Amino acid sequence: MAVGPSLTHASKFELQNKSWATPGVLAKAGCHVSIITDNSVIPQQYLPLCAGMAVKAGMDEFDALKAITINPAEHIGVADRVGTLEVGKDADVVITNGCPFEVMTETRAVFIDGNRVDTL
Image: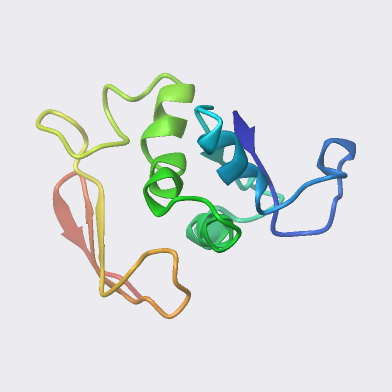
């Protein structure tokens, strides 16, 4: 289940009853949840913030991490290449100094295809 965008007001009919608790409730019920931004409705750089808001509303942190990594990769059929850290997959990794769902967490390094890239 794709849940979102949740960062703005209900601009679409299907978002009329949205809640930050929705992803956690669905995950606890055994659903395969992806948290989405519906880019360009919400720019994708706010995806960790959306996951953090779901955690604040009761979602398990590990479920939230899966909801922005492996679950969406499986939903769109690219989990053989991305979504988890495994030998043979694309090596795109972000290293932070804290929980990626916290707004004060800073990015320390970014690797794309296994190569470190400069961050601004």
